Length: 44
Length: 251
Image 1 (cartoon, chains in turn blue, purple):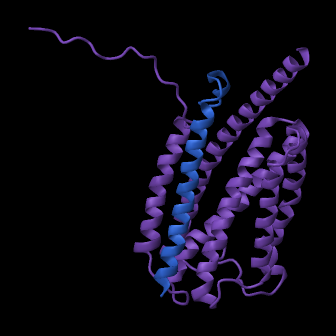
Image 2: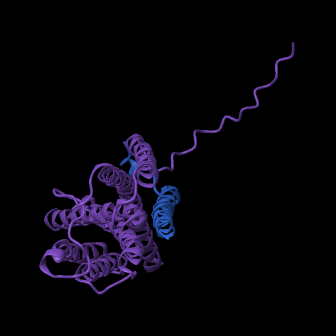
Image 3: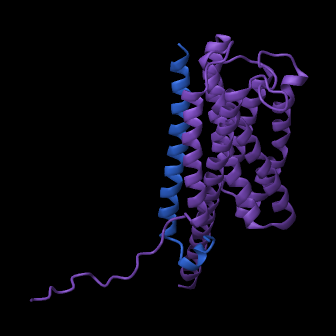
């Protein structure tokens, strides 16, 4: 009984966080194409 | 012996489009490693609790999610105050990025809390002071993010968002103390200085908290960099549009 709720909770956390991370990486790459190199010098 | 011709194309190095850096790679790998450990301890090594049985495992993600959201909203507060004082784009974007990451973690906290509530309380949701104030907090920060997408000039938008970012912190305080101020279904602190659970269960919760903190740091840095790029694109579009208007007016 408990394991169904536990599995749903952990899957929700892993799914949402990895989906958000994936979206951020792709959005960053897409935007970087439109921004010149010298304006992307926030990277270390 | 016939030498084969060099067929490697002499193309220039492709531009680095990634928002990653050495620091974020280290944080990312550390986050993955600690998350793996947290899953191992939370789901395999630690045992069930006497009253909550296996549903206690949900607290190892529920409580860290909420704590991470609190921290993010604290960063939004600092960023908002600093923006109003300095008008610096850095603080404005830091506040906005932290609010978005905080909303993600708060949403996860609400979902995992509901999933914990069903086997423990017999219901997914109850209009209890802690749950209700948390839902209000979630809506307030959604409102903050909505303001950031409104069609004001960047300065007006940032100023209004900063004011909402400062006011919204009051709700974090209400949520945190709601279990002490009002009687409700939600229990007091399970973890903290006088924890209700100990040993391996407490360690599993600790690992979950460290994992969430590392994941949130990674997300926050990347969100900040993406926000920075969005601002650069927005400004260059504005410059292009103005130049086009001037050209049209000159013709």
